[in-house]
Length: 141
Image (cartoon, rainbow, N blue to C red; front, side):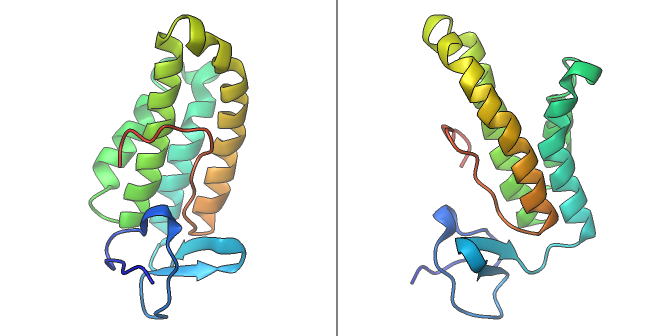
């Protein structure tokens, strides 16, 4: 059994046992934050969905999740975990755009998976569950 600090989300969604801990393993192998409030869920949903507003907002769309994460990450480990995942997704997108040849070949399929994952991440955040994006190099741990 992995030991988990009550104020920090479990890495790699480790098994959890004690019922009074912050993080609880629920059906389907998902991890839920039992202490996540309404503000936590709204902020994390907004962080996941803001990049979809890029066509309307323009180049400022990626800055909104960065701002939300920077402001609220000290308040809740749930927000901190989702914020790191959103930042890793945005950094991966930036990396694929900057890498000229190999990155551009992967950009279109990765963007389709990423956009679906943004919505899935928002749904998980609304349910107080942790979420990991697929096909991602996690630069922020």
